[in-house]
Length: 86
Image (tube, rainbow, N blue to C red; front, side, top):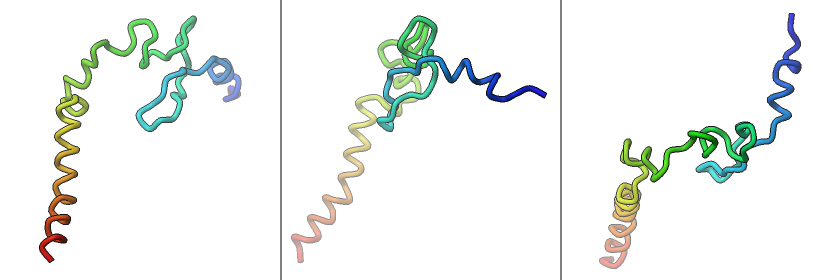
């Protein structure tokens, strides 16, 4: 039977990625050898440039974010107008 700490020990000893996640917390992935970022945040051949992932799914483009903000503002605006009518 193998010791779990012996298997994960070297990985846990590696420096961590210095990037921030969308939630604002630090990325917990290990950095790529010789780099300060993990493979997802810009290690060699890491995160694609020009935010291509945002364009692929259309969820995090500037236009999509602006549209969601406008949609979230509609109920507030409706409540404000109703409050003025009273």
